[in-house]
Image 1 (tube, rainbow, N blue to C red):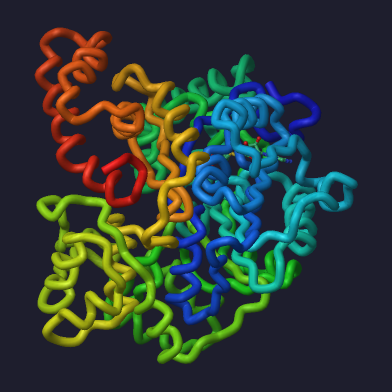
Image 2: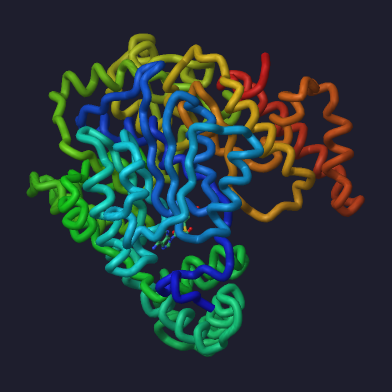
Length: 502
Ligand SMILES: C[S@@+](CC[C@H](N)C(=O)[O-])C[C@H]1O[C@@H](n2cnc3c(N)ncnc32)[C@H](O)[C@@H]1O
């Protein structure tokens, strides 16, 4: 049931905890660079500021604060259960540069509390815009207008049209049936989903024949109840066209620049040649995005905006991207050069493939990788493919030693893991070199915690014994396999990023 203060958004069940790499400052900077827009990256010692709106349990804000102890991080949510959970983790990790504020975004901009929030270099709103009503969205725009500094970068994700067109009716039947079932909103979502499943099974044409609605019913059926209630049970749930979101952001003097998912900015991988020719009829970026979304619908858009975009020449852009440092997130043996992309399967070949292989050897700048290749490739292509396929992440401070704040948070996160039979939350680990979080499964958090406590890989038998305690005996071999693989493949990445000692 919704409380009156929640204004139709779900507040009786806490949201799942999660970290999403699109929120990380370097990912946002890369999106801007790809679009040829300048970003003033904070230099070591600079007092930058990061703001998160609708922060949930605050994992993004916590990882950003721990990785950047010189920054001020502010995170806002009106659900006291979320703020309490986030603040408890901040306290446990003794983070003194993150502030969690319990406030309603429809009212915050004009409040006294807002005066104390510093103008932000980076802002993230993940999973908020499509789930709140018009008064909250208007309040968000006023807050962004007041609190994004000139040149600041904003990340905003939302359910997008026309992709969601095929499942709007599905959300509605889940929501209406759920409300009528009564009880807590997670039970409501389950009851609503049960009806949707039954209607589909009875051959109800819309749910059985609309490919998106039909697939979605199956894919979400096993998902966490808390996720489902927040996704489907908001009274204001509404997918948006990019053009309308861009128009709303323009009120805060924010210019749309790119997607935080690098591959989506790369039209050769998104569209066929014929579709690209249609796109090229337009120079206006909003119209180009509409054509793109019509050719390759994206359900969840991760848009990046800049307050006052400064355009770079192509040459300046290539120099900036060439100067970025890439660090591999996978072992050389795991490298994928055949990628599933919206336009189909793209097989990387020639110099690009050679450079991807070279990038797996260790931390290197884009320019160095390009220099070592025999043949032509562009900095944008190389960085987009490696980061977009999640095989590399951009490094903010290549040689930085991990600050105590990051070690403390990573230890706190690791100490919570005592089982690998876990709910599916998407967690992370703080890395000063990344200037943010490394997405990390709970098992990797567990291993990082042990290594931070001075244990070595030789202690793995004890780790496996601990993690096998709540696993059926016939599955113990599988636990050993999974832990051994994680040690072989993930520990070198943790070492390279300074997350665990050498
Ligand atoms: C889908 S959750 C996303 C949470 C977080 N960003 C994440 O991705 O894990 C949306 C969040 O917005 C918050 N929210 C909804 N309406 C709000 C409002 N009017 N003011 C402040 N926060 C609000 C909810 O409490 C919830 O934590």
